[in-house]
Image (tube, rainbow, N blue to C red; front, side, top):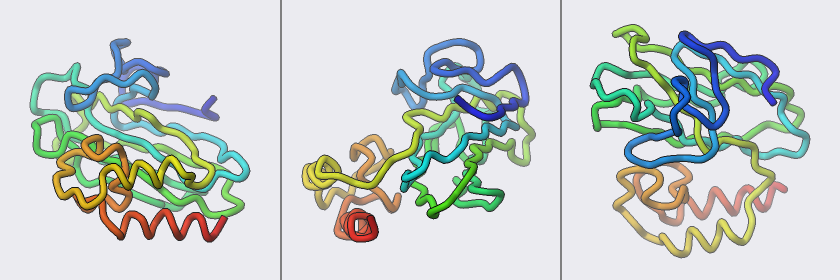
Length: 185
């Protein structure tokens, strides 16, 4: 459960879009997540022992106009830990993947969406498959192996979330992220 949640329109909803529909981003439907509207802030307590916060974010497909755009950010204890580029509904950049390391001793994590230069009209935003992880395991290594040396990660879901550094490929740099996490835990 979140500690607090605000939304620019309506109220944030668990496992539904801000209009109460299934969560859908870039043609994919997601069972778990939060539907909200820019400008929004959703605050969670950071679980002890968590090592990363992960999420796929985007403009919900219930918006069919190409007017929606938002910037997503993750703050940890008041400092910006990660931020997306502008995410749009127009097919250019419909989703973004977060894989944010959590410093030891962190207390609060804030999920933020903001409208862009065009305001926040139509900015129905979703945070899907979002949550805290507790280190990487053998299943992550297997997923990397299945997608090894792929250079066609147009969307993060194309490579099963294994493009950990979001550079459009699954390669040794992604494996290095896993290895570093294993060594530090």
